[in-house]
Amino acid sequence: MQVSITGRHVNVTDNIKAHVEEKLERCLGMFPRIESIRVILDEEKLSKIAEVVIQGSNHIRISALEKSENLYDAIDRSIEHAERQMRKQRDKVQDHHK
Image 1: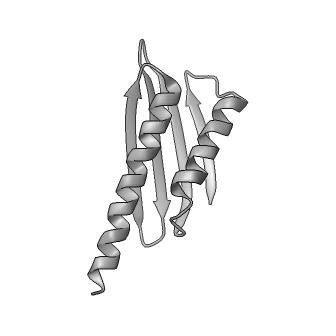
Image 2: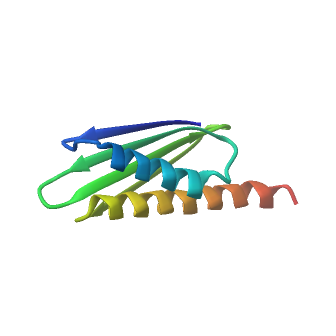
């Protein structure tokens, strides 16, 4: 699984990278078909934006975008949102083969 972290108007520190990688490993480690994950961090006037784009096999593409006043909160919520979408996608595939 290839993970890339990009910051737009945000200085991506080692603490932020460690937090993102730990959260991704814990939440998305149960999905084996993930090929790459892109995390894009952005800052506007008062809000911090975290976007997670997951590319999986069989042309599966999941995108989750969250805004918050705290960057870590935005990261956590966007990863959880992507995890819910991945779980829903996995359940569709498993239910289809009944």
